[in-house]
Image (tube, rainbow over all chains, first blue to last red; front, side, top):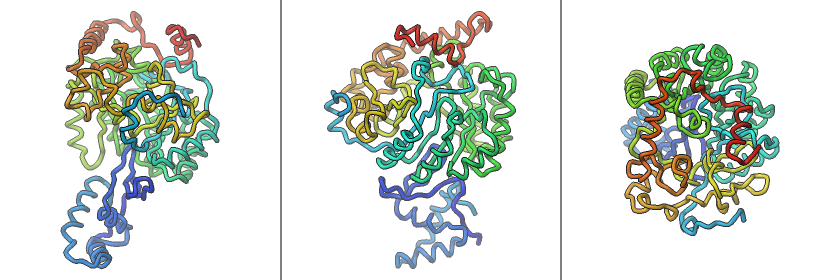
Amino acid sequence: MQPIKFSPTHRLQWEEAQQKYVILYPEGMVELNQSSAEILLCCDGNRNLAQIVNELEQKFATTGLTNDITAFLEVALQNGWIQQ
Amino acid sequence: MVGSNNNPDAKAFRITPPRWLLAELTYACPLQCPYCSNPVDYAKYPSELSTDDWKRVLTEARKMGAVQLGFSGGEPLTRKDLVELVKHARELGYYSNLITSGYGLTEEKIIQLKEAGLDHIQVSIQASTQELNDHIAGTTSFHHKKEVAHLVKKHGYPMVLCVVIHRENIHQMPQILAMAEELGADYLELANTQYYGWAHTNRDLLLPTKAQFEQAEQIAQAFKEKVAGKMKIYYVVPDYYEDRPKACMNGWGTTFLTIAPDGVALPCHSARDLPGLDCPNVNDYGIQEIWRDSKAFNFFRGFEWMKEPCRSCDEKEKDFGGCRCQAYLLTGDMYMADPVCSKSPEHAVIQQAIDSAGANASLATNEKPLVFRNSKNSKAMSLVDGKGV
């Protein structure tokens, strides 16, 4: 599996005024909920899907996140937020 | 207190913080596009904020929550302090958009701006051919613009190509789309002309027919599907051919803050033409006070200001009655429903405008020439409205 990297032409940023992470791109902004932000923060170009799932399951002491994370990353890929 | 807030409803209305700051750094521009959105009498406002003033504006707006920042104008590249302002914006955490004609943009400057933290460059091209581009721009600029588009890509910026669509270039839609593909645009903004400012002055010569719009839209739609996943298309609709008005500015004083070159703060970039708003200047007041307390920013907040048919309309929370500037420009009453709306009692003015443009379609250019956007014409138009220069 290929490592997943956040897009170099988008910016993932914590917004203090909104108390949430946002994705910024030309003339636009997407507000993220906590779980979406957690997934994208893992997309650092070093980890692949299995490693991201493993990391988040450990971090939140849970299991069975594969489907949710895969579905979100597919959306992220379609929107150009991540690269594989 | 910035003026008196005479809209009691605005107080009850929850004031959201600004998200978008449009910094119109200057009205100076080497291009002369006849659809420019700057006020036709811009020559009356020659003063420009200093570098320190702009830095303070950026800092204060960011503190309130503004995150998208547009450096615009005029041509923002004519400001010698642009790199310094971009650097300041990056340190504050803005996402910075440079909205430029590309005129005068060198590779060296593109690199400097990148190092300073600029996030994206939007280059405007007027047409798909040199002859028409240079005619519309009033400047020899076509090949340089294409070169700039390549350099923007080369240096890792997302590349946004902006083409304003009107009667003189709408027939080039297929070639414009091919050009965007060839230049490797990541985003293509196809902006049907909005008829304010200079575009309003030239409307008879710029407004296409409905058939032309529909054909161009169909071509653009097919292209959008073809390039899905590779290029994003922002299509700005031609509101004269819609039944409902645009949700202008996402609602007055909710999201957008424009600062004009001379420091006047505007709820939308055309608002300085509206009477009695007393738009405040950042030289006199802080951004927070302007946004929350000023008469101008509270004027059309909420719904209490509305007349019928807007007041009892079940769509008012969707489109906020449309655009105040368009209502004023076309009906003389800024409280009126945007006449684009088919429910507006003044809706007939739109059909009159369309008919008038149609009647002018066959005129030769020497019978009714375009009024190009330049200082000479702006000075002349400042006199026309009786306010003097």
